[in-house]
Image (cartoon, rainbow, N blue to C red; front, side):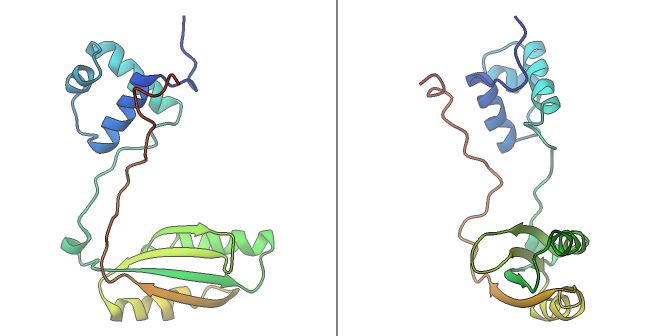
Length: 165
């Protein structure tokens, strides 16, 4: 019986959990950790990739080593939230290299942007030369990170042993 690409069992969940923690793991080592032989393990990984559970494999870089020491969150309010205005803002913010995350949010403002930059001078340049020139922004509030308490790319996956409940 062929498995549907949208059905995940406990082995699939375990594979995803292991790969998000170490995408450099060899297929043989991964297969051993999930108690499969290498060929069916690789077939599962390929199915998870094809069905979109695995977007891509990346290296997480150390921002301090790359002169991106300062992290800031910027609340952005737009003067108009028509579909065209939102699409224009989205397009322009995607082009800003300093922006590592941008989310449209519900609540007292429209977007929350996360940037990583060298220092306060670079922040000032970013704000004045890049963000402020985007049409339609009515207000921003910035929160500079003093200490990063937790930062992870790991998604909490339901327990491999609890998936049958």
